Length: 300
Image (cartoon, rainbow, N blue to C red; front, side, top):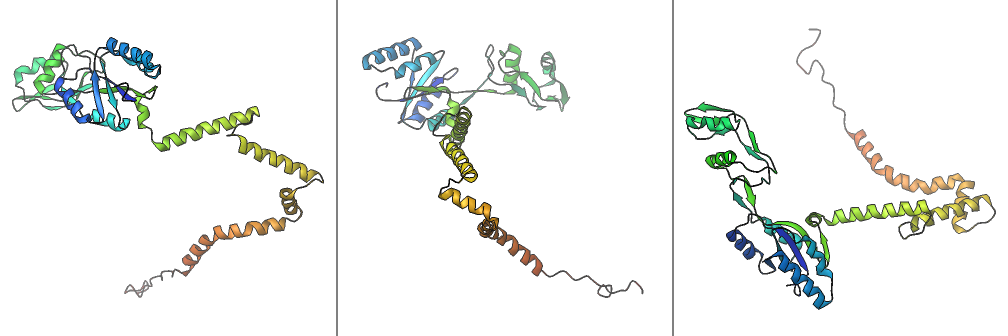
């Protein structure tokens, strides 16, 4: 697989059943393969492959082989593969001693349990009332907080209510692509996000270069523009001149030429506004209703 593939998803496989894993393998075929194994064996295999091939790209994957993890080798699009893996999540009951991956909230409503179970709710400080011979929860209750271990009472209550609060599946922790390892959140970046970040970086480089007076490709256009302004300023104060400066000198000697040059642009921008004003003028004003039109006179 190390010879055949160049892209890998490192996934946590906690609480994933064998039938669920079988469905994931089936759903990812034929472009992807799920590999589960002992971490020490996988690390050793990667090191041996690196020594044999003389490359060190795969060695970057070794630090991330920690815990109950599996590898998904793929030739497809990484984002699409991750989305496909996310489809195979299965609901699971809250077992005693399990660490809650999310907050568990019991909703208000009729539980269908008989009044003899009231003491059970009182132990967990859940407000209830008897309604039509059954126990009804009055308000929503946050039973388990994320990161806490599930107790026996909480597990028993959720079981009685038929609530399966947790869902488990393969969770993508890291992404490997041709020697680079990065967070899966990078897969959510769009082309627009990348362009925006790149443009922000270029502007920062340009600002830093201008501040240090150090030439870079990003700062070159601004440096040329500033240099041109300086040369024009010198030409205006001295007898030295060049074609670009001559045009500016003419504008300074006769500002009316500048006005003539700007007029076509102003006319173009003002044309739509003038047309709109003409339309407004042509709209007939509504005639005021006379008292006679209404059928009576104020003086009658």
